[in-house]
Length: 306
Image (cartoon, rainbow, N blue to C red; front, side, top):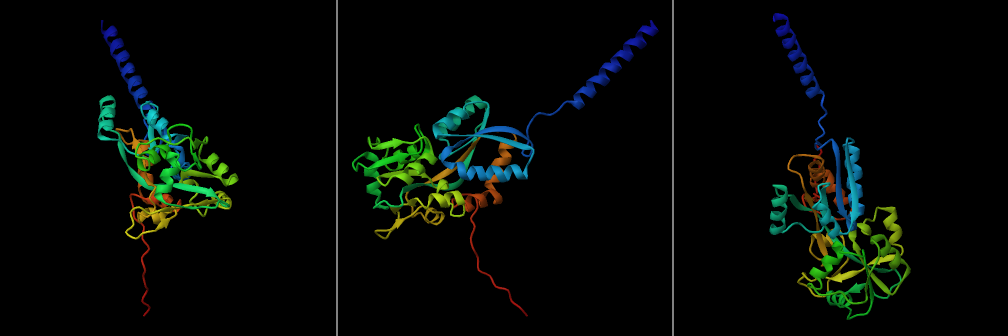
């Protein structure tokens, strides 16, 4: 009997030992702000600046892997309903009703906030006769009253399409002269070849004067001036730029939002913090968008030499 008791005690000890060892050796698969893999969806019109954000983020945090899909805004919101998509970057946040709907399925509200301010750039061929438009001109072109062919940046519901319908047409319908290219790159290619069309793309595709690729675009296209609707002075027309967005002079400005589904601090939280803090905000500024989180001002100073 004593031998049997000793055997069972020894057996229980071995089971406990291996159980603890197995528990200690188990790999924690949860991601953290500096380690792990997630999937995100990004509005295609923001692709150039988000590519740069990801490049610097991955270089700074090599153990993170953010797999990105670029697609129209409506598809990004559909992806947000999937478990596999942790974050989307789009041109609008959530309404309170939408936030509550996500809370009912996730048990928590997604985080969302503005990261920067972008613009819908109106582009024409460098040889086009007109590159200055009143706000009424833009509205008449989009509604079909002026039969100029207008090229949009996608064949489904992009943020550019939604923004122009909401902010210019006030939920009105596009005219038959409004046609869709496959993406922003194709809009630029079409406008570069034709003098009889007008294109609409996100500023981050054509606004970076330091990017050799975008400089090549600007030898074939022009950024149009659009009437300032908020200016007290009359006949003020502004090109889309960081300065005119910040001063409220360019009328087709829009926000760039993140929407994040994380109830604990993971890779998505780390990437959101990166874009919201100094380095990420500097990247937005360097891409000639207007940072939303941090203001960067040039201050004059002097050094007193004794």
